[in-house]
Amino acid sequence: MNANIKAKPRTFLAQDFVLTDWTSIEPFFIDLENRKLDSQTALEQWLADLSELEAVIGEDACWRQIKMTCDTTNPALEEAFTFFVTEIEPKIKPYAVAINKKLLDCPFKENLDQKIYFPYLRSVANSVTLFRDENIALQSEIAILAQQYGSISGAMSVEIEGEEKTLQQAAKLLHDSDRDLRKNVFGKITERRLADKNTLNELFDKLLALRHKVALNAGFDNYRDYKFQELGRFDYTAEDCFAFHEAVKEHIVPLQKELLEHRRKELGIEQLKPYDTEAEPIGRKALQPFANGEEMLQKSIAVFSKLRPYFGECLSVMQTMGRMDLDSRMGKAPGGYNCPLPETGVPFIFMNAAGTVNDLITMMHEGGHAVHSFLSHDLPLSAMKEYPMEIAELASMSMELFTLEYWQDFFETKEEFIRAQWEEMERVIDVLPWIAIIDKFQHWLYTNPGHSVAEREATWLSIVAEFSTGNVDWSDYPEYQRNYWQKQLHLFEVPFYYIEYGIAQLGAIAMWRQYKQNKEQALDNYQAAMSAGYTQTLKELYQTAGIRFDFSPAYIQELSSFVHNEMQALKNQ
Image 1 (tube, rainbow, N blue to C red):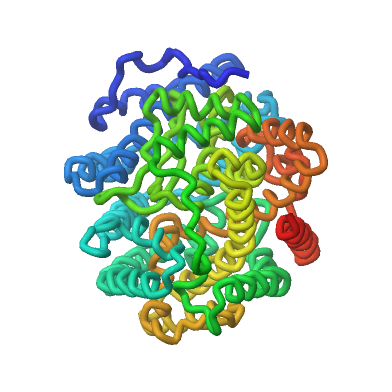
Image 2 (cartoon, rainbow, N blue to C red):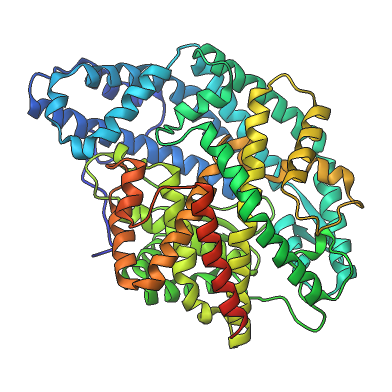
């Protein structure tokens, strides 16, 4: 397998075509809308041309977003993004619906290979069902408002010992063994975030109102039910999510409590505070797996190559093509992502690395997404690469655990290597209750759209208390705890995209268990599932990966026991 993938030569658009405005792209939509589909050959060519058009537009849109998040201080980059979502995207939607209806009405679609076309045709039918003309302008407004979260967060910084730091850079100090330093840094971070709490509440209220209106326009009682259908959640329901919440509460929170107690004893303190949960004991320095993004990348390539040479080649190709922006700096949007670029096929990794183990984990995670993009590049249609997030996150979270045994490349001693592995396993456990909290909060937010800020804060605290281990004392930071939800960008930018992490985390644990039993078979299954894109249903994709699509209480208990045993084995090394 070769990672030097190339874009398919254009046959519908000119090779040098560049999207500038609506008039430059509209003729291609008119062609597709008016073309006769009077044979199987005509349909297949029409689908190929549609796929090419979608890839060109999709890649253009991705670059606008990438450039804007890499530099939130440049008005021109924000304007380019805004121009797309206000002047181009809204005008595409009516044509997209007409084109989708044309496909659904075409009798020759029955002759397509249903084994790979079924998920695509199902998604097309779903999008036609949901479309409303009156939602076009609303969705554009939502997209513009949502990106403001990145601008607000990207402008946040604090001064530590006379040096201005991004919040990501400052958070690195929360690993330090000096408790007074941690307390000071945490206090500054809380003050800075709270300085924008009202701005973020106002922004969220606007988004909430607009999203609710979109749902009502589409005939739904609330945005939750609308979004479930829009996300194509054909394989599980809101009730399944509630079962996940309860299972995490029953089987994962006790394990998290045990880990926090282990941390407290290591630190030698009577009571954990929020600034202690990632801290190192006195006399032990925080792990620093790399000094900068370049070093992180080179070590990541080495780790991926040891797992499978092809995986390392994927990262090397991205490096050669300049498809990464890794270091934290002022003016960057927060967070990290892998952005698939549908025409060229070589994705872009964005993150805010500051030299921590969490950054190492993020790189492994986004690298897994990147490998998924490479593996699915040769699928016949662009739409087949728009796989569900539950499989996308399985790709990334499995890669974190697959690579775990090769992290030695990042550390000088075996003791540091074991500590890093332990931190990853801690993260695997810690993230599940947080996912349950965020997901349960979203269900409440969008089924109670007329709520006040005070009601929102009270509900947030109530849900957090449900999943609390009782180990951490937040009493010194009541206001920050009430507004802590604001740090989760998904709530602002991609609502309801979060339970996928929980489903995929369970899947990744199952993949890791499979890997421990038969490494090569697990990696073969991984590549087979990721190469399939969205040509199989979600349950079928998990089956291809060699695992079950299951987040029942019994399965969660089974997988949590496996992780607990692995942690005990690591502790005994």
